[in-house]
Image 1 (tube, each protein chain N blue to C red):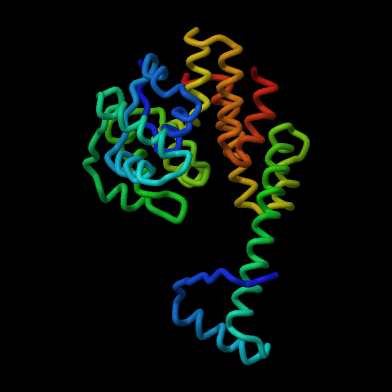
Image 2: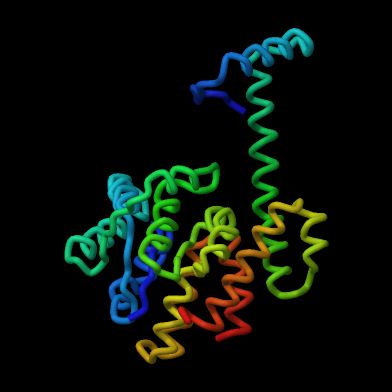
Length: 97
Length: 172
């Protein structure tokens, strides 16, 4: 795939130094290391969005338990979903009462 | 009239579904200055929220939505975090300082982060959907209108839309 777009990002000097270490270890260019890291992050996050949506829907429908949601998404994310499902239920049931 | 404080996300949500102005028939909407600043900022960008932000600003100018100041800026500062921005923090302080017990907040991260403080201060966090349900409960809209509005709200949200879709089948 053609690499035409240039992305400029400001990073902390310490992070740059850590990338420099990797550059030597892996014998890769800094540009390649950052690109690979970005691809991996974007892929993971995109997958997580889908997984979070699926888990949230199943949790709201009582098809998976909180513990199962924790195992899939981790405690914090599962708690966040449980919080939203709870306030959404209350909003449906009681409106502003 | 029910007194509420609303954050930027909930104001925009209600405006997107076309119910913000009508909701003023049943609620007194109060917002802190930081929310006005956020809406002014949104009105500058060329995305789908721009038009909604402009409409919210018109309602603020007409006085339909009241802007309230906060006295304890330090309290707001202390609430700021990765998940809670200035607008949301000032919303919480506005509730606390003005004895308003309903905080309408569509930002899940912020709501989740403020949950503990809200319980401690007897402030109830709700989402904009609660306003639509209240319009229905007070016979301002019928069931068919409610279904259409909730459908629009579902489309405007990300994973939360999936939750609302599941629950709407149970509750509507």
